[in-house]
Length: 542
RNA sequence: GCGCCCGUAGCUCAAUGGUAGAGCGAGAGCCUUUUAAGCUCGGGGUUGUAGGUUCGAGUCCUACCGGGCGCACCA
Image (tube, rainbow, N blue to C red; front, side):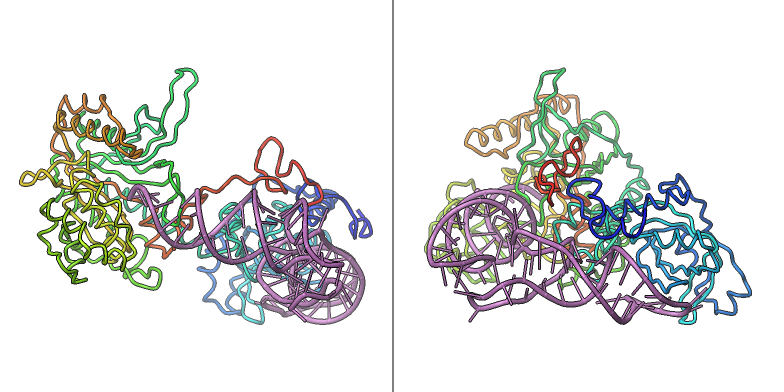
Protein backbone atom coordinates (compact mmCIF):
# COMPACT_ATOMS: atom_id res chain seq x y z
CA UNK A 1 0.00 0.00 0.00
CA UNK A 2 1.68 3.20 -1.13
CA UNK A 3 1.27 6.55 0.49
CA UNK A 4 -0.52 7.76 -2.62
CA UNK A 5 -3.05 4.99 -2.40
CA UNK A 6 -3.71 5.73 1.23
CA UNK A 7 -4.07 9.42 0.56
CA UNK A 8 -7.30 11.16 -0.30
CA UNK A 9 -9.99 9.10 -1.88
CA UNK A 10 -8.48 5.76 -0.75
CA UNK A 11 -10.90 2.99 0.14
CA UNK A 12 -14.44 3.02 1.40
CA UNK A 13 -15.10 2.38 5.09
CA UNK A 14 -15.15 -1.37 5.81
CA UNK A 15 -18.69 -1.19 7.15
CA UNK A 16 -21.35 1.15 5.79
CA UNK A 17 -21.96 4.01 8.17
CA UNK A 18 -18.49 3.96 9.65
CA UNK A 19 -16.37 7.10 9.28
CA UNK A 20 -13.83 7.50 6.51
CA UNK A 21 -11.07 7.28 9.05
CA UNK A 22 -11.90 3.62 9.56
CA UNK A 23 -10.86 2.96 5.94
CA UNK A 24 -7.43 4.42 6.71
CA UNK A 25 -7.19 2.24 9.77
CA UNK A 26 -8.06 -0.87 7.76
CA UNK A 27 -5.25 0.05 5.39
CA UNK A 28 -2.85 0.39 8.29
CA UNK A 29 -3.91 -3.07 9.45
CA UNK A 30 -3.06 -4.37 5.97
CA UNK A 31 0.30 -2.63 6.12
CA UNK A 32 0.97 -4.29 9.47
CA UNK A 33 0.13 -7.69 8.00
CA UNK A 34 2.50 -6.84 5.16
CA UNK A 35 5.25 -6.56 7.78
CA UNK A 36 4.34 -10.01 9.07
CA UNK A 37 2.62 -8.59 12.16
CA UNK A 38 -0.42 -10.28 13.66
CA UNK A 39 -3.05 -7.58 13.92
CA UNK A 40 -5.19 -9.43 16.45
CA UNK A 41 -2.81 -11.71 18.39
CA UNK A 42 -4.14 -13.95 21.12
CA UNK A 43 -2.11 -13.06 24.16
CA UNK A 44 0.69 -11.05 25.63
CA UNK A 45 2.81 -11.85 28.66
CA UNK A 46 3.09 -8.71 30.67
CA UNK A 47 5.20 -8.54 33.77
CA UNK A 48 3.42 -5.58 35.35
CA UNK A 49 0.19 -3.74 35.19
CA UNK A 50 0.83 -0.08 34.44
CA UNK A 51 -0.09 0.94 37.97
CA UNK A 52 2.42 -1.55 39.35
CA UNK A 53 5.21 0.18 37.44
CA UNK A 54 4.15 3.49 38.88
CA UNK A 55 3.94 2.08 42.40
CA UNK A 56 7.28 0.33 42.17
CA UNK A 57 9.36 3.00 40.43
CA UNK A 58 7.72 6.40 40.74
CA UNK A 59 9.88 7.27 43.75
CA UNK A 60 13.11 6.57 41.88
CA UNK A 61 15.37 9.17 40.30
CA UNK A 62 16.83 9.05 36.81
CA UNK A 63 20.07 7.64 38.25
CA UNK A 64 18.29 5.12 40.47
CA UNK A 65 16.46 3.78 37.48
CA UNK A 66 19.62 3.57 35.38
CA UNK A 67 21.24 1.58 38.14
CA UNK A 68 18.22 -0.70 38.59
CA UNK A 69 18.00 -1.41 34.85
CA UNK A 70 14.55 -2.89 35.33
CA UNK A 71 13.30 -4.73 32.25
CA UNK A 72 9.54 -5.03 32.06
CA UNK A 73 6.75 -5.88 29.69
CA UNK A 74 3.60 -3.78 29.78
CA UNK A 75 0.47 -3.57 27.67
CA UNK A 76 -2.33 -1.13 27.15
CA UNK A 77 -4.41 1.00 24.86
CA UNK A 78 -2.64 3.90 23.15
CA UNK A 79 -4.16 7.13 24.46
CA UNK A 80 -1.80 9.68 22.95
CA UNK A 81 1.10 9.65 20.53
CA UNK A 82 3.77 12.30 20.12
CA UNK A 83 6.14 11.71 17.24
CA UNK A 84 9.51 13.40 16.83
CA UNK A 85 10.81 11.82 13.69
CA UNK A 86 13.15 9.11 14.88
CA UNK A 87 11.86 9.14 18.48
CA UNK A 88 8.34 9.13 19.80
CA UNK A 89 6.28 9.05 22.96
CA UNK A 90 2.98 7.38 23.60
CA UNK A 91 0.80 7.13 26.66
CA UNK A 92 -0.73 3.76 27.41
CA UNK A 93 -3.78 3.11 29.54
CA UNK A 94 -4.97 -0.17 30.99
CA UNK A 95 -8.19 1.26 32.33
CA UNK A 96 -6.79 1.85 35.77
CA UNK A 97 -3.50 3.64 35.22
CA UNK A 98 -1.47 5.39 32.59
CA UNK A 99 2.17 5.11 31.69
CA UNK A 100 4.34 6.75 29.07
CA UNK A 101 6.45 4.73 26.69
CA UNK A 102 9.45 6.13 24.88
CA UNK A 103 10.22 4.64 21.49
CA UNK A 104 13.48 5.33 19.66
CA UNK A 105 14.43 4.09 16.24
CA UNK A 106 17.76 2.99 17.76
CA UNK A 107 15.92 1.09 20.47
CA UNK A 108 13.38 -0.91 18.47
CA UNK A 109 14.92 -1.06 15.02
CA UNK A 110 13.52 -0.20 11.59
CA UNK A 111 10.69 -2.69 11.68
CA UNK A 112 9.71 -1.94 15.25
CA UNK A 113 9.63 1.74 14.50
CA UNK A 114 7.55 1.14 11.39
CA UNK A 115 5.06 -0.86 13.49
CA UNK A 116 4.90 1.98 15.98
CA UNK A 117 4.28 4.38 13.13
CA UNK A 118 1.26 2.34 12.05
CA UNK A 119 -0.34 2.51 15.51
CA UNK A 120 -3.39 4.72 15.85
CA UNK A 121 -4.94 6.12 18.98
CA UNK A 122 -7.11 3.42 20.48
CA UNK A 123 -4.94 0.50 19.34
CA UNK A 124 -3.51 -1.98 21.83
CA UNK A 125 0.21 -2.45 22.11
CA UNK A 126 2.67 -4.37 24.23
CA UNK A 127 6.02 -2.81 25.07
CA UNK A 128 9.06 -4.64 26.36
CA UNK A 129 11.76 -2.37 27.64
CA UNK A 130 13.49 -0.68 30.51
CA UNK A 131 11.93 1.54 33.14
CA UNK A 132 13.47 5.02 32.89
CA UNK A 133 12.72 8.62 33.60
CA UNK A 134 12.83 11.32 30.94
CA UNK A 135 14.61 14.67 31.19
CA UNK A 136 11.26 16.26 32.00
CA UNK A 137 10.91 13.78 34.83
CA UNK A 138 8.20 11.49 33.50
CA UNK A 139 8.40 7.84 34.44
CA UNK A 140 8.47 5.86 31.19
CA UNK A 141 9.30 2.53 29.67
CA UNK A 142 11.93 2.84 26.94
CA UNK A 143 10.94 0.31 24.31
CA UNK A 144 13.20 -2.50 23.13
CA UNK A 145 10.40 -4.37 21.42
CA UNK A 146 6.97 -3.29 20.23
CA UNK A 147 4.27 -5.95 19.99
CA UNK A 148 1.11 -5.02 18.20
CA UNK A 149 -1.87 -6.27 20.20
CA UNK A 150 -5.01 -5.13 18.43
CA UNK A 151 -6.31 -2.62 15.93
CA UNK A 152 -9.12 -0.19 16.66
CA UNK A 153 -10.86 0.52 13.38
CA UNK A 154 -12.90 3.31 14.93
CA UNK A 155 -11.31 6.34 16.58
CA UNK A 156 -11.52 6.86 20.36
CA UNK A 157 -13.40 9.80 21.88
CA UNK A 158 -11.84 13.21 21.47
CA UNK A 159 -9.10 13.65 24.05
CA UNK A 160 -9.45 17.30 25.03
CA UNK A 161 -13.12 17.59 25.81
CA UNK A 162 -13.61 13.94 26.62
CA UNK A 163 -16.94 12.46 25.70
CA UNK A 164 -19.69 14.95 26.41
CA UNK A 165 -22.59 13.73 24.26
CA UNK A 166 -24.91 12.17 26.83
CA UNK A 167 -26.60 9.94 24.32
CA UNK A 168 -23.31 8.38 23.22
CA UNK A 169 -22.22 8.10 26.85
CA UNK A 170 -25.23 5.91 27.63
CA UNK A 171 -25.51 4.03 24.35
CA UNK A 172 -21.80 3.33 23.94
CA UNK A 173 -20.80 3.13 27.57
CA UNK A 174 -17.40 1.66 26.62
CA UNK A 175 -16.48 5.03 25.13
CA UNK A 176 -17.66 6.77 28.28
CA UNK A 177 -15.50 4.44 30.37
CA UNK A 178 -12.50 5.01 28.12
CA UNK A 179 -12.81 8.77 28.18
CA UNK A 180 -14.13 9.65 31.60
CA UNK A 181 -12.26 8.55 34.75
CA UNK A 182 -15.18 9.68 36.92
CA UNK A 183 -17.38 7.13 35.25
CA UNK A 184 -14.91 4.35 35.98
CA UNK A 185 -14.78 5.55 39.58
CA UNK A 186 -18.55 5.54 39.86
CA UNK A 187 -18.93 1.96 38.72
CA UNK A 188 -16.05 0.78 40.88
CA UNK A 189 -17.72 2.44 43.85
CA UNK A 190 -21.00 0.78 42.98
CA UNK A 191 -19.29 -2.59 42.81
CA UNK A 192 -17.54 -2.00 46.14
CA UNK A 193 -20.86 -1.03 47.66
CA UNK A 194 -22.60 -4.18 46.44
CA UNK A 195 -19.72 -6.36 47.60
CA UNK A 196 -19.89 -4.77 51.04
CA UNK A 197 -23.60 -5.46 51.24
CA UNK A 198 -23.06 -9.12 50.35
CA UNK A 199 -20.30 -9.36 52.92
CA UNK A 200 -22.49 -7.72 55.55
CA UNK A 201 -25.28 -10.22 54.99
CA UNK A 202 -23.02 -13.24 54.52
CA UNK A 203 -21.32 -12.41 57.83
CA UNK A 204 -24.71 -12.52 59.53
CA UNK A 205 -25.54 -15.97 58.15
CA UNK A 206 -27.87 -14.86 55.39
CA UNK A 207 -27.76 -17.01 52.28
CA UNK A 208 -28.01 -15.51 48.82
CA UNK A 209 -30.72 -17.06 46.66
CA UNK A 210 -32.16 -16.56 43.21
CA UNK A 211 -35.89 -16.60 42.67
CA UNK A 212 -37.93 -16.42 39.46
CA UNK A 213 -37.65 -13.45 37.16
CA UNK A 214 -40.61 -14.79 35.17
CA UNK A 215 -43.64 -15.12 37.35
CA UNK A 216 -47.25 -16.16 36.65
CA UNK A 217 -48.37 -13.50 39.13
CA UNK A 218 -46.35 -10.28 39.40
CA UNK A 219 -46.46 -9.69 43.12
CA UNK A 220 -44.55 -8.12 45.97
CA UNK A 221 -44.96 -4.51 44.95
CA UNK A 222 -47.43 -2.03 43.54
CA UNK A 223 -46.38 -1.57 39.93
CA UNK A 224 -47.30 -2.35 36.35
CA UNK A 225 -45.39 -5.36 35.03
CA UNK A 226 -43.93 -6.32 31.68
CA UNK A 227 -45.68 -9.28 30.07
CA UNK A 228 -43.99 -12.01 28.08
CA UNK A 229 -45.07 -15.35 26.67
CA UNK A 230 -43.74 -18.86 27.06
CA UNK A 231 -44.41 -20.79 23.85
CA UNK A 232 -44.08 -24.37 25.05
CA UNK A 233 -46.28 -23.79 28.07
CA UNK A 234 -48.45 -21.38 26.09
CA UNK A 235 -48.83 -19.08 29.06
CA UNK A 236 -48.23 -15.40 29.63
CA UNK A 237 -45.66 -14.66 32.28
CA UNK A 238 -44.74 -11.42 33.99
CA UNK A 239 -41.24 -10.15 34.50
CA UNK A 240 -41.02 -9.78 38.22
CA UNK A 241 -41.68 -6.46 39.88
CA UNK A 242 -40.20 -7.82 43.13
CA UNK A 243 -38.86 -11.12 44.50
CA UNK A 244 -40.66 -10.64 47.81
CA UNK A 245 -43.29 -13.35 47.72
CA UNK A 246 -40.80 -16.02 46.65
CA UNK A 247 -38.30 -15.05 49.32
CA UNK A 248 -40.96 -15.38 52.00
CA UNK A 249 -41.88 -18.82 50.66
CA UNK A 250 -38.24 -19.71 51.33
CA UNK A 251 -38.46 -18.44 54.90
CA UNK A 252 -41.61 -20.55 55.29
CA UNK A 253 -39.51 -23.48 54.10
CA UNK A 254 -36.99 -22.95 56.87
CA UNK A 255 -34.36 -20.79 55.23
CA UNK A 256 -34.45 -18.34 58.09
CA UNK A 257 -32.17 -15.69 56.59
CA UNK A 258 -32.25 -15.14 52.84
CA UNK A 259 -31.38 -12.33 50.50
CA UNK A 260 -31.35 -11.64 46.81
CA UNK A 261 -29.63 -8.85 44.90
CA UNK A 262 -31.03 -8.79 41.42
CA UNK A 263 -33.08 -7.01 38.83
CA UNK A 264 -36.70 -5.98 39.04
CA UNK A 265 -38.70 -4.80 36.05
CA UNK A 266 -41.44 -2.22 36.15
CA UNK A 267 -43.33 -1.06 33.12
CA UNK A 268 -43.50 2.58 34.08
CA UNK A 269 -42.04 5.93 33.18
CA UNK A 270 -38.34 6.59 32.78
CA UNK A 271 -36.84 9.45 34.75
CA UNK A 272 -33.68 10.47 36.54
CA UNK A 273 -34.84 8.23 39.39
CA UNK A 274 -36.44 5.38 37.41
CA UNK A 275 -35.07 2.83 34.98
CA UNK A 276 -37.41 0.06 33.75
CA UNK A 277 -34.99 -2.53 35.09
CA UNK A 278 -33.31 -1.73 38.36
CA UNK A 279 -31.44 -3.57 41.04
CA UNK A 280 -32.95 -4.33 44.38
CA UNK A 281 -31.66 -6.00 47.48
CA UNK A 282 -34.29 -7.82 49.49
CA UNK A 283 -33.45 -9.60 52.72
CA UNK A 284 -35.70 -11.50 55.09
CA UNK A 285 -35.08 -12.55 58.66
CA UNK A 286 -37.14 -15.00 60.64
CA UNK A 287 -38.05 -13.90 64.16
CA UNK A 288 -37.43 -10.21 63.32
CA UNK A 289 -40.01 -7.47 63.42
CA UNK A 290 -40.00 -4.10 61.75
CA UNK A 291 -37.81 -2.51 64.43
CA UNK A 292 -35.18 -5.25 64.15
CA UNK A 293 -35.18 -4.79 60.40
CA UNK A 294 -34.61 -1.05 60.78
CA UNK A 295 -31.68 -1.74 63.10
CA UNK A 296 -30.17 -4.06 60.51
CA UNK A 297 -30.93 -1.78 57.60
CA UNK A 298 -29.17 1.22 59.04
CA UNK A 299 -26.08 -0.85 59.75
CA UNK A 300 -26.21 -2.27 56.23
CA UNK A 301 -26.58 1.14 54.60
CA UNK A 302 -23.74 2.53 56.71
CA UNK A 303 -21.54 -0.41 55.71
CA UNK A 304 -22.38 0.15 52.05
CA UNK A 305 -21.50 3.82 52.38
CA UNK A 306 -18.21 3.03 54.11
CA UNK A 307 -17.26 0.78 51.19
CA UNK A 308 -17.97 3.49 48.65
CA UNK A 309 -15.93 6.21 50.31
CA UNK A 310 -15.54 8.42 53.33
CA UNK A 311 -18.46 10.40 54.64
CA UNK A 312 -19.99 12.83 54.68
CA UNK A 313 -20.88 12.26 51.06
CA UNK A 314 -21.38 15.28 48.82
CA UNK A 315 -24.61 14.99 46.91
CA UNK A 316 -25.74 17.61 44.41
CA UNK A 317 -24.16 20.47 46.30
CA UNK A 318 -25.24 19.28 49.74
CA UNK A 319 -23.94 16.65 52.10
CA UNK A 320 -25.30 13.32 53.26
CA UNK A 321 -24.00 11.86 56.49
CA UNK A 322 -24.58 8.23 57.45
CA UNK A 323 -24.06 8.70 61.16
CA UNK A 324 -26.00 6.20 63.24
CA UNK A 325 -28.67 5.93 64.33
CA UNK A 326 -30.95 7.31 61.62
CA UNK A 327 -33.89 9.26 63.02
CA UNK A 328 -37.27 7.50 63.00
CA UNK A 329 -40.41 9.47 62.34
CA UNK A 330 -44.02 8.27 62.14
CA UNK A 331 -45.66 9.24 58.86
CA UNK A 332 -48.48 11.21 60.49
CA UNK A 333 -45.98 13.06 62.69
CA UNK A 334 -43.92 13.90 59.62
CA UNK A 335 -46.97 15.31 57.86
CA UNK A 336 -48.16 17.00 61.04
CA UNK A 337 -44.82 18.70 61.65
CA UNK A 338 -44.68 19.95 58.12
CA UNK A 339 -48.18 21.37 58.19
CA UNK A 340 -47.72 22.89 61.62
CA UNK A 341 -44.56 24.52 60.36
CA UNK A 342 -46.68 26.08 57.62
CA UNK A 343 -49.06 27.23 60.39
CA UNK A 344 -52.07 26.32 58.34
CA UNK A 345 -55.32 27.60 59.89
CA UNK A 346 -57.71 24.89 60.99
CA UNK A 347 -55.05 22.19 61.03
CA UNK A 348 -53.70 20.33 64.00
CA UNK A 349 -51.87 17.03 64.25
CA UNK A 350 -55.03 15.35 65.61
CA UNK A 351 -56.80 15.92 62.29
CA UNK A 352 -54.71 13.12 60.81
CA UNK A 353 -56.03 10.62 63.35
CA UNK A 354 -59.70 11.21 62.67
CA UNK A 355 -61.09 10.49 59.20
CA UNK A 356 -64.08 12.82 59.58
CA UNK A 357 -61.94 15.77 60.66
CA UNK A 358 -59.47 15.14 57.81
CA UNK A 359 -62.33 15.04 55.32
CA UNK A 360 -63.63 18.34 56.64
CA UNK A 361 -60.21 19.91 56.54
CA UNK A 362 -59.53 18.72 53.00
CA UNK A 363 -62.81 20.37 51.96
CA UNK A 364 -62.00 23.59 53.79
CA UNK A 365 -60.93 26.81 52.06
CA UNK A 366 -57.80 26.75 54.23
CA UNK A 367 -56.65 23.54 52.57
CA UNK A 368 -57.57 24.96 49.17
CA UNK A 369 -55.39 27.98 49.88
CA UNK A 370 -52.53 25.78 51.05
CA UNK A 371 -52.78 23.57 47.99
CA UNK A 372 -52.75 26.61 45.73
CA UNK A 373 -49.73 28.03 47.56
CA UNK A 374 -47.76 24.77 47.40
CA UNK A 375 -48.94 23.96 43.90
CA UNK A 376 -50.67 20.73 44.94
CA UNK A 377 -53.50 19.10 43.11
CA UNK A 378 -56.20 19.18 45.81
CA UNK A 379 -58.82 17.42 43.73
CA UNK A 380 -57.80 13.72 44.04
CA UNK A 381 -57.68 13.67 47.84
CA UNK A 382 -61.40 13.39 48.44
CA UNK A 383 -61.69 10.21 46.38
CA UNK A 384 -59.12 8.47 48.59
CA UNK A 385 -59.46 6.48 51.78
CA UNK A 386 -58.15 8.02 54.98
CA UNK A 387 -54.87 6.15 54.92
CA UNK A 388 -54.21 6.94 51.27
CA UNK A 389 -54.90 10.61 51.99
CA UNK A 390 -52.26 10.63 54.69
CA UNK A 391 -49.81 8.79 52.42
CA UNK A 392 -50.45 11.25 49.61
CA UNK A 393 -49.98 14.23 51.91
CA UNK A 394 -46.71 12.68 53.01
CA UNK A 395 -45.54 12.16 49.46
CA UNK A 396 -46.48 15.64 48.35
CA UNK A 397 -45.37 17.58 51.40
CA UNK A 398 -42.58 15.70 53.11
CA UNK A 399 -40.89 13.05 51.00
CA UNK A 400 -38.68 15.27 48.88
CA UNK A 401 -37.45 17.25 51.86
CA UNK A 402 -36.03 14.33 53.86
CA UNK A 403 -32.35 14.81 53.18
CA UNK A 404 -30.47 13.10 56.00
CA UNK A 405 -31.19 9.36 56.19
CA UNK A 406 -34.57 9.10 57.92
CA UNK A 407 -36.87 6.17 58.65
CA UNK A 408 -40.51 6.99 58.15
CA UNK A 409 -42.73 4.52 60.02
CA UNK A 410 -46.36 3.60 60.58
CA UNK A 411 -47.61 3.37 57.01
CA UNK A 412 -51.37 3.12 56.46
CA UNK A 413 -52.62 -0.40 55.92
CA UNK A 414 -54.28 0.52 52.59
CA UNK A 415 -50.91 1.14 50.93
CA UNK A 416 -49.20 -1.82 52.61
CA UNK A 417 -51.00 -5.02 51.57
CA UNK A 418 -48.14 -7.31 52.63
CA UNK A 419 -47.27 -5.73 55.97
CA UNK A 420 -48.48 -6.77 59.39
CA UNK A 421 -50.81 -4.35 61.14
CA UNK A 422 -49.81 -2.70 64.39
CA UNK A 423 -51.31 -4.59 67.33
CA UNK A 424 -52.53 -1.32 68.86
CA UNK A 425 -53.88 0.27 65.67
CA UNK A 426 -55.05 -1.90 62.76
CA UNK A 427 -55.22 1.15 60.47
CA UNK A 428 -51.42 1.30 60.53
CA UNK A 429 -48.74 -1.25 59.73
CA UNK A 430 -45.36 -2.08 61.20
CA UNK A 431 -43.64 -0.70 58.15
CA UNK A 432 -40.92 1.81 57.37
CA UNK A 433 -39.34 3.47 54.39
CA UNK A 434 -35.87 4.94 54.47
CA UNK A 435 -35.47 8.31 52.78
CA UNK A 436 -32.12 9.77 51.81
CA UNK A 437 -31.59 12.93 49.76
CA UNK A 438 -35.31 13.11 49.10
CA UNK A 439 -35.38 9.64 47.59
CA UNK A 440 -37.01 6.48 48.83
CA UNK A 441 -34.10 4.11 49.25
CA UNK A 442 -35.50 1.25 51.35
CA UNK A 443 -38.81 -0.23 52.36
CA UNK A 444 -39.32 -2.81 55.09
CA UNK A 445 -41.87 -4.26 57.43
CA UNK A 446 -43.03 -7.00 59.71
CA UNK A 447 -44.30 -9.52 57.20
CA UNK A 448 -47.98 -10.30 57.29
CA UNK A 449 -48.07 -14.05 58.01
CA UNK A 450 -51.76 -14.62 58.74
CA UNK A 451 -52.94 -16.41 55.58
CA UNK A 452 -56.58 -15.47 55.97
CA UNK A 453 -55.83 -11.81 56.58
CA UNK A 454 -53.39 -11.83 53.65
CA UNK A 455 -56.06 -13.26 51.38
CA UNK A 456 -58.51 -10.60 52.51
CA UNK A 457 -55.89 -7.89 51.80
CA UNK A 458 -55.45 -9.29 48.29
CA UNK A 459 -59.21 -9.22 47.81
CA UNK A 460 -59.23 -5.57 48.91
CA UNK A 461 -56.49 -4.91 46.34
CA UNK A 462 -58.54 -6.64 43.65
CA UNK A 463 -61.35 -4.20 44.35
CA UNK A 464 -58.88 -1.34 43.86
CA UNK A 465 -57.81 -2.94 40.61
CA UNK A 466 -61.41 -3.16 39.45
CA UNK A 467 -61.73 0.52 40.21
CA UNK A 468 -58.92 1.15 37.73
CA UNK A 469 -55.79 1.08 39.87
CA UNK A 470 -53.42 -0.81 37.56
CA UNK A 471 -50.79 -0.90 40.26
CA UNK A 472 -52.95 -2.61 42.85
CA UNK A 473 -51.57 -5.93 43.99
CA UNK A 474 -52.66 -9.08 42.15
CA UNK A 475 -54.22 -12.06 43.97
CA UNK A 476 -51.65 -14.78 44.60
CA UNK A 477 -53.40 -17.91 45.89
CA UNK A 478 -50.18 -19.91 45.77
CA UNK A 479 -48.54 -17.44 48.12
CA UNK A 480 -51.54 -17.60 50.46
CA UNK A 481 -51.17 -21.38 50.44
CA UNK A 482 -47.51 -21.02 51.46
CA UNK A 483 -48.61 -18.82 54.37
CA UNK A 484 -51.18 -21.49 55.14
CA UNK A 485 -48.33 -23.87 55.93
CA UNK A 486 -46.94 -21.30 58.31
CA UNK A 487 -44.48 -18.42 57.97
CA UNK A 488 -42.66 -17.63 61.21
CA UNK A 489 -42.67 -14.06 62.45
CA UNK A 490 -40.44 -12.44 59.83
CA UNK A 491 -39.06 -9.02 59.01
CA UNK A 492 -38.07 -8.06 55.48
CA UNK A 493 -36.59 -5.14 53.65
CA UNK A 494 -35.92 -4.00 50.09
CA UNK A 495 -33.09 -1.59 49.28
CA UNK A 496 -32.85 0.25 45.98
CA UNK A 497 -29.26 -0.39 45.01
CA UNK A 498 -29.21 2.08 42.13
CA UNK A 499 -30.50 4.94 44.24
CA UNK A 500 -28.06 4.22 47.01
CA UNK A 501 -25.31 4.17 44.40
CA UNK A 502 -26.50 7.55 43.11
CA UNK A 503 -26.17 9.09 46.54
CA UNK A 504 -22.78 7.54 47.26
CA UNK A 505 -21.32 8.63 43.91
CA UNK A 506 -22.94 12.08 43.68
CA UNK A 507 -24.78 11.05 40.51
CA UNK A 508 -27.78 13.20 39.59
CA UNK A 509 -29.39 10.53 37.40
CA UNK A 510 -29.99 6.82 37.84
CA UNK A 511 -28.58 6.49 34.33
CA UNK A 512 -25.20 7.46 35.70
CA UNK A 513 -25.10 4.37 37.93
CA UNK A 514 -26.55 1.84 35.46
CA UNK A 515 -24.01 0.78 32.86
CA UNK A 516 -26.53 0.40 30.07
CA UNK A 517 -29.63 2.40 30.95
CA UNK A 518 -32.77 1.83 28.93
CA UNK A 519 -32.90 3.97 25.80
CA UNK A 520 -35.15 4.03 22.81
CA UNK A 521 -33.59 1.62 20.28
CA UNK A 522 -31.51 3.36 17.66
CA UNK A 523 -32.93 3.58 14.16
CA UNK A 524 -31.43 4.35 10.76
CA UNK A 525 -28.38 6.46 10.01
CA UNK A 526 -25.54 4.11 10.78
CA UNK A 527 -26.67 3.51 14.31
CA UNK A 528 -29.16 0.68 13.96
CA UNK A 529 -28.38 -2.08 16.41
CA UNK A 530 -29.83 -5.06 14.55
CA UNK A 531 -27.11 -7.66 14.90
CA UNK A 532 -28.00 -9.42 11.65
CA UNK A 533 -27.54 -6.38 9.49
CA UNK A 534 -24.71 -4.54 11.19
CA UNK A 535 -24.74 -0.96 12.24
CA UNK A 536 -26.29 0.43 9.08
CA UNK A 537 -29.03 -0.86 6.88
CA UNK A 538 -29.69 2.22 4.88
CA UNK A 539 -27.97 5.47 4.13
CA UNK A 540 -24.55 4.57 2.76
CA UNK A 541 -23.53 8.18 2.39
CA UNK A 542 -23.23 8.66 6.11
C1' G B 1 -48.32 10.39 28.61
C1' C B 2 -47.82 16.21 28.97
C1' G B 3 -44.53 20.72 28.97
C1' C B 4 -39.78 23.22 28.04
C1' C B 5 -34.95 23.09 25.70
C1' C B 6 -31.33 21.08 22.21
C1' G B 7 -29.63 18.81 17.19
C1' U B 8 -24.00 22.76 12.18
C1' A B 9 -17.23 18.83 9.80
C1' G B 10 -15.05 12.66 13.25
C1' C B 11 -15.07 15.84 18.24
C1' U B 12 -15.87 20.78 20.85
C1' C B 13 -18.15 25.00 19.11
C1' A B 14 -18.95 29.83 15.79
C1' A B 15 -21.94 32.18 11.89
C1' U B 16 -27.88 40.75 12.82
C1' G B 17 -32.66 36.21 7.12
C1' G B 18 -27.57 37.61 2.56
C1' U B 19 -20.73 33.46 -0.11
C1' A B 20 -21.24 27.80 6.16
C1' G B 21 -16.11 29.00 9.63
C1' A B 22 -12.32 27.99 13.78
C1' G B 23 -9.62 24.77 17.00
C1' C B 24 -8.59 19.78 17.71
C1' G B 25 -8.66 14.86 15.38
C1' A B 26 -7.72 12.24 10.68
C1' G B 27 -4.24 12.57 5.87
C1' A B 28 0.78 14.15 3.47
C1' G B 29 5.68 16.10 5.02
C1' C B 30 9.88 17.79 8.69
C1' C B 31 11.71 16.71 13.53
C1' U B 32 16.00 11.20 18.39
C1' U B 33 13.51 13.42 25.81
C1' U B 34 7.90 14.99 24.34
C1' U B 35 3.52 15.23 27.26
C1' A B 36 -3.07 19.44 24.90
C1' A B 37 4.77 18.43 21.60
C1' G B 38 5.90 21.81 17.61
C1' C B 39 6.16 23.54 12.37
C1' U B 40 4.49 23.19 6.90
C1' C B 41 0.70 21.61 3.26
C1' G B 42 -3.84 19.86 1.39
C1' G B 43 -8.61 17.87 2.31
C1' G B 44 -13.18 17.61 5.15
C1' G B 45 -20.56 19.79 5.17
C1' U B 46 -27.64 17.60 1.65
C1' U B 47 -26.59 22.56 8.90
C1' G B 48 -31.18 15.61 12.32
C1' U B 49 -35.44 14.47 8.36
C1' A B 50 -39.57 16.24 5.33
C1' G B 51 -42.41 20.22 4.04
C1' G B 52 -43.57 25.59 4.17
C1' U B 53 -42.76 31.25 4.31
C1' U B 54 -39.16 34.39 1.56
C1' C B 55 -35.85 37.28 -4.03
C1' G B 56 -32.85 34.52 -0.48
C1' A B 57 -33.36 29.86 5.40
C1' G B 58 -28.17 27.02 9.60
C1' U B 59 -31.31 31.23 11.22
C1' C B 60 -38.53 32.09 10.76
C1' C B 61 -43.10 28.41 10.72
C1' U B 62 -45.22 23.16 10.82
C1' A B 63 -44.71 18.00 11.33
C1' C B 64 -41.62 14.02 12.26
C1' C B 65 -36.92 11.56 14.31
C1' G B 66 -33.38 11.49 18.34
C1' G B 67 -31.72 13.33 23.04
C1' G B 68 -31.83 16.16 27.70
C1' C B 69 -34.54 18.37 31.69
C1' G B 70 -39.17 19.08 34.43
C1' C B 71 -44.14 17.15 35.69
C1' A B 72 -47.21 12.72 36.22
C1' C B 73 -46.64 7.40 37.79
C1' C B 74 -43.55 4.64 40.71
C1' A B 75 -38.77 2.51 43.85
